[in-house]
Length: 357
Image (cartoon, rainbow, N blue to C red; front, side):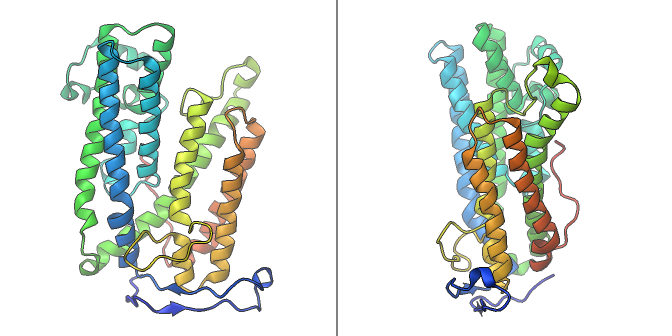
């Protein structure tokens, strides 16, 4: 799949024939992007600031947890910091590539559903350090476990031991954030042209993991909880839909954070030209344009735009019907990706590591 770099070879095609819907569109010039330049855009320009932002917010999460335990902060302040840290995590981990896959970070700090019985038993063991927390099962730590504790504490103030356990969860998230930033460092300076096999594999991983990230959002976060709720009879009992987060506003903000990351890597901002090669993230739309697939790039952008419009219309009170309609538009993107986009990018689709969720 290795394509010889042609740094500034231009793709100048946009003819009227076969493109009736784009007859009045301007001719678009896009540089050809090599696999090396695509990976440089991702690992050198895009991911480092996201990793830094996640670490900064994770450190603030630790501080907020400590302040709550010391009586110096409110529960609402800790909840707000949990939400902000979660969104920074989703921005970095959607899709999961490189160290996020090899470290299985998703499983380590964002495994759900949390198991309340395991959480209770783990707290009874009174772990005191992060080393102790390594012996705690993943369904009793990470973002979902802290979410459950925050919900419980809103009804009854935490005991000192419970508050200490919550602080250890926050420290575990911060430790993973630091590890990810450290491991992403060498990727930012990698000489991709010197390792063609690594470059080819990394490009394939990114393309496949983008699709896995979309399907994780569509199926695991939205469609599966709804269909399971409807088919098991829980809807008739009045129980809430078992989404990943415990309140609807948190779920909506989480979904939007995931989608924003997928959209950023999938298409150019409205009206923006393709970026200069090697100087910024190269979205998949720009890769298609650079390879001369302008009609497909336009079709791809429209499909992503459909999802974006649906996402923007959602509110915390949106019905299951509205959410399933959004999932349907995401499925259309998946089908287009599988049938046309991956082949146009010359990347085979295979198994994507969704980190066990």
